[in-house]
Length: 105
Image (cartoon, rainbow, N blue to C red; front, side):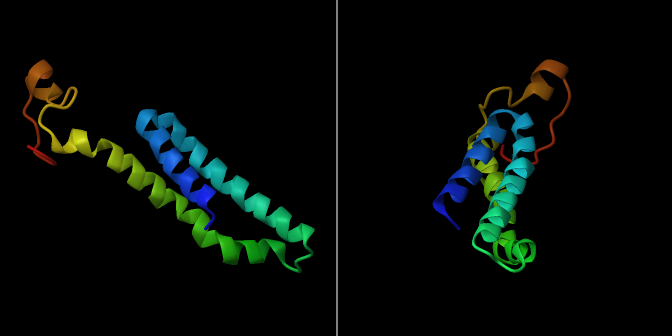
C-alpha cells in the first residue's frame, strides 16, 4: 500500500474524530482510489482493468476503513479512560441519571 493511502486513512479517521460528517468522505475516497486504479490499468493496456483492480487493490482499499476507525478510537482514548474528560459525567451532573460504567471509571 502506498504511504499516501495510509496517511489518507489516518487523516480521514482524524477528520471523523473532529466532526462525524467527515465519515461520508471515506467511501468517496475509496471509490476515487478504485477508479484511479482502473484508469491507470486501462492506460497501460490491461486486459481486465476492472477485475485486476478489484483483485489487486480491493483489500488495500478496504483496509482504509479499519485504519480510519482505529485512528478515531485512538483520538478518543483519553476521554474514555479518564474520569475528568469534558462532559464526562453529563448524565449524572446535568440530568441526574445514573451512568452505565461501560468504559473507564
